[in-house]
Amino acid sequence: MLYWRALVAGFLLFTWGGLGVSGVSVTNKLPPCEFPAIYNFGDSNSDTGGISAAFEPIRVPYGEGFFHKPAGRDSDGRLIIDFIAESVKLPYLSAYLNSLGTNFRHGANFATGGSTIGKPNETIYEYGISPFFLGMQITQFNQFKARTKELYDEAKIASDTDKLPRQEDFAKALYTFDIGQNDLSVGFRKMSFDQLRAAIPDIVNQLASAVQNIYHQGGRAFWIHNTGPIGCLPTNFFYNHNPPPGYLDEHGCVKDQNNMAVEFNRQLKERIIKLRTELPEAAITYVDVYATKYELISNAKALGYADPFKVCCGYHENYDHVWCGNKATINNTEVYGASCKDPSKSISWDGVHYTQAANQWVANHTLYGSLTDPPLPITQACHRQ
Image (cartoon, rainbow, N blue to C red; front, side, top):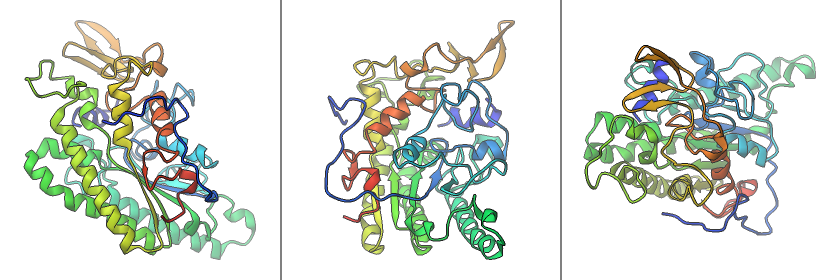
């Protein structure tokens, strides 16, 4: 793992029994949306190669479980955004920052690992926080859209634009957001809990401003993930082996951190409700990723997974840590941060990010409307309720 990746990794109840791997599909008579493109904004939970293109490629064994090589994703395979693309029958998204071999015909991914909603005041080499915060991602989208129009105007033959989105597709596209976790992790490091709680309204309003910007550019369908149970990330326990009484909840997660995530999500949902009034033609779906991930972690054994706090990739014994894909010398012995024997049984890939199996489980329980507001599957997310 790169130094800055290790930095961001280091700082960082809802039961639906019997859903099975297919989730619950909400049935109605609405027609499918047939989205022609997806535009995604986010952090490492949905980055498909942005931060890797901007700084340094991700190493093996990342990507081994599906792509059979590193594919710009912080996982052994696919992310939730990949399963979203599959569900609406579109190709996987190319990262906007990746200049080679990219195809933007069906959308683009502006997410980068380490991104925050708020503007960062530190460098990626200090604490792993990306310079491509949400406001910058929106600026990149605006430039992308404007430049696409210029290239269409300048095109002499059809093949000049065959890897660009059609102009009319911007209004019909699905706009997805998965960001906010790093704002909390930065806050835990730099603020008191009261200060962070007081900062949440501004953070949420900045996300709302991003949605408004895209709306005024013609976007109408928005799919917005809340933030996950950050207190359940295994990195919380790498340097804290004996937490004091009351520090953890009944499932072993850091109570105060999860409470802050719940408060962030409460305010995010309230702001989305207001956005629906402010943007009368928008269809905005709030997706409860927190509930899904917490359900998976708290019932890992019953669902067939290993200890949710045990990391699949990397070496973490006592107080010695070798991050996924890295090498280090411990007691005069070279140790490699290899992947576990069967990642499909693990929830945590590298201590911060989820395995493909966990991502698929979460996708299967959020894409069909059972944990969304309004309760519509993603294939119908263009319909305003």
